[in-house]
Image (cartoon, rainbow, N blue to C red; front, side, top):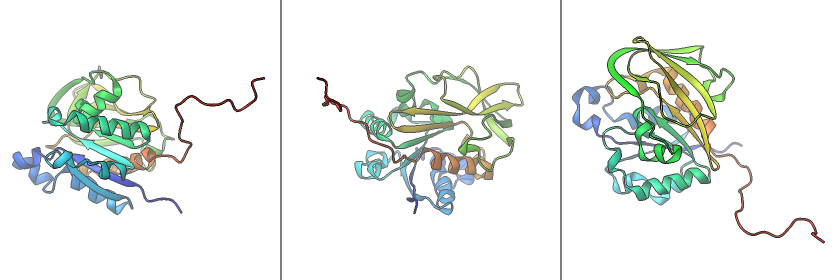
Length: 241
């Protein structure tokens, strides 16, 4: 019997409190919209937000999280460095991490990437078309050749990230830009997926195919049961003399 994947959805939960338009789209918060869908998909789901003690990411929560989903925008700088260190260590130890939209600027993503993670942007409510460029990948299971989003914020190249292990989606925007919108990485034993869509003023996380990608990514990023590496001085397996 396969183990139920434990997911924690982390969100700043600031826009939904400050902006009535955002609140009308996500009355319970972006985190709850994603969490409610994942619960229906059979995941064991918890949530955490910025203003909770330890940002909701206590040792107990992190130690019982297989995949952490992260959405942030306004308050990257408010995330405590000690919490970022703990999340990084959990990823290195095997926890999966899914980084959504403007969380490309989050402390944890920049720390794991080692680059600025900067990009071009424009908020004009334009059409985004995400093209699948890895049709055989588990993250694209059940997705067509592309995903159309009627209105989204534009992100454009150059995106200052390391070369992805795998490029899963490439976006085209009505204004003419393109963007590497779905990128996978491995850090230590942990799998990372960056997924671009999700500006707070649009109902992107109500889009069935976007939610399907996130669910697929959570299954893909869940820890494997492979061997745990040992880092120490060791005795030889064979006789040296």
